[in-house]
Length: 225
Length: 301
Image (cartoon, rainbow over all chains, first blue to last red; front, side, top):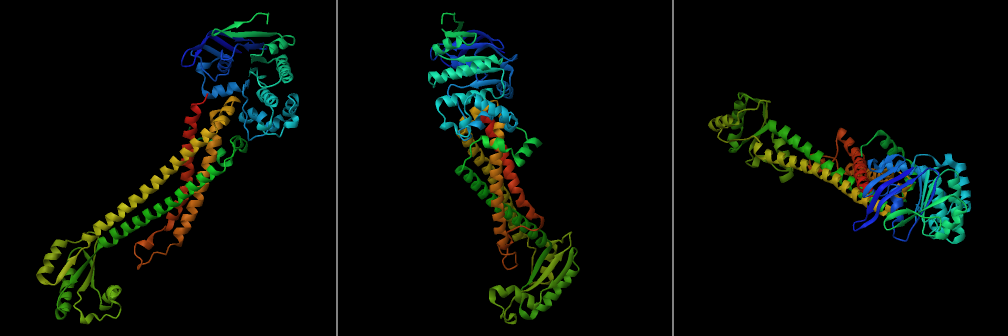
């Protein structure tokens, strides 16, 4: 699905990531962890084509990232669900419309997905907030809305960047359960988090592999977590 | 970004869904409307000026080129005889289609604006005027002058070219200036729309980032902006043009006494021309916003 080969990335000054090789197989569940500033967000951005690697190759759905036009990347994004660290919405549209936004921009009518949308809203527990505007939502509600928006196109891959960053423990458990459920439905999941207790909690629910960024490289962390 | 029929259809019929994706703006939208309207208003006047100057140049060039005047300046008792002699010479001059002396009444009419209608011409040594209409081939002015000098000492030939040429030139320059102004107004609309579109794109950077993230193509994002600005420029220009055309319509009608100034306006099929201004403004806005959006979107991941 997503393959990184000898990828390096540097921001102006020095190298942030170097010599990274990574392969996300369909249906796998990965955690990406590491200290703040280690490059978790950068690695995720490389995975959804928001950044081009300084060197090495990124292959998304068997396409080389370098050969893709802007519109090709837009089409790829429809097959990936991305949950941002600071989930951004269109603040003038209601929660429902925001969740249905991927349908809208891909030319499908939100009405056609009516039942799915209702079901999805119920699944993330936002039915009662359907008509609210994003700025009125709490941190947890925003994260759940972002997750719902990420999965409405039924993507093959879900990339989540600190989805539990701004929510309490109970809410992060709930979000984790949603991600695990998605994985059980066959989606490939990659979650970047620095929250080790979340990873521990996940281990009992799903067979998750943990990738750790340290010294600019990605290592497979042991079972000792 | 090339214009396809699909784009045009979307611009005209609209995609309300795509439209709502960009947050509505109140004040700046009104400014764009106002500026487009004002530009269109001025463009209609520039157009009217150009067309009127063009008509004036054509009339002066055409009518005056084919007529000349002979003045008979002679003592009152010899005036009639010299007039007769001049007319006889004109009859035998090649290239003269028609020549006739103006009657006292006609001369009185010509002088009335300056001396009043009660003037008795018999008491003044007013020269007799002879109107000469040329054939298309024209006549030999120098030869005619020599013959007149020999036989009619009081005759002075004025073939109008001396004062006609600078007038025609001035009118043609005015026409050029008018079209230049209309062109500049068009470019100003383009510049203004580009500025407004850039501001809107910058103000909505977050919206664009969200749309990119959920898989919107550049075309989809640009469309929402292009449609807005095209419709605003078109709408503003329609209002501005209609107001300007009403104003032109209310100008006093062209008349002989008013001369050039009252001729400002549109005649015949020229009334159709102002209607092209809103369409042009819309097209300019479409292209300007498309270019601005293209540039802005390329900078985003």
